[in-house]
Length: 321
Image (cartoon, rainbow, N blue to C red):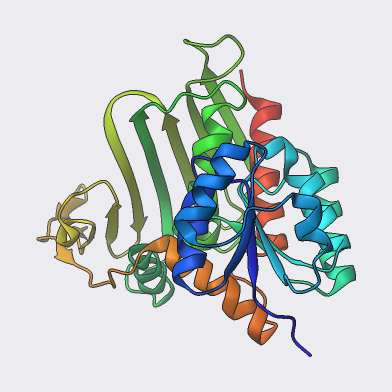
């Protein structure tokens, strides 16, 4: 018999409160916890559920799943405890901070027969879903390269660098687009505000099929820019999540190339908007988790996908200068 999709949220800080709101709106939230008693009480009242100790939540057999939004250094401990208690687990990115913990979580989920899903939010953005579908349809041909910019002024962290804070979403999207793991990863970053914590980072990936991808992440930037550009043999697509106008968020450029002369010449085309739904990405992500529990299906961002993203981040850390 499938376990109830009742969900408790562990951690109600900056992002956990958004998870609590969405699971409550989906009718699945039954409890929440937070080390800060005042924060837990406030969010509990707002969402009309009890605030409980994490240990009580894990011991409660009526709670079928937990969503973990604690600091990243606690992800492994909480995820392993929840899986040992028989819960399905949604954990915010990153899955873990090292390979050993990440592999242990995935193995525990498989051993327990429980759903494990990681919060790579932009994989559930309707615009990215439309972009990925367009690429997989062959509309722009084989991918040549892609780049992602995730830039803003703040929120500055002191416990993790900008690569670990911002880039998991971008790496997840790029791995989905290219459909393979990179055979080469290089990264460079700079620490300007807090010693040892990079404020800007550049990540380069090369794929076995010949494609290349780049990520530029910074929280020390004069304005917000969330842009993904995908370049194929027969066209290009721009996903600009920071654009205010939904019609400007996702555009296809069917640029061509005239090779009849001595040197190739570009043949420019007007941008075409690509239609996509306007559902809230986080609501779609939370709903997907509940659907996977109910149908015993593998999540789009499951443990295997999360390990692939984690591997890129760790390889970037090994090469950064």
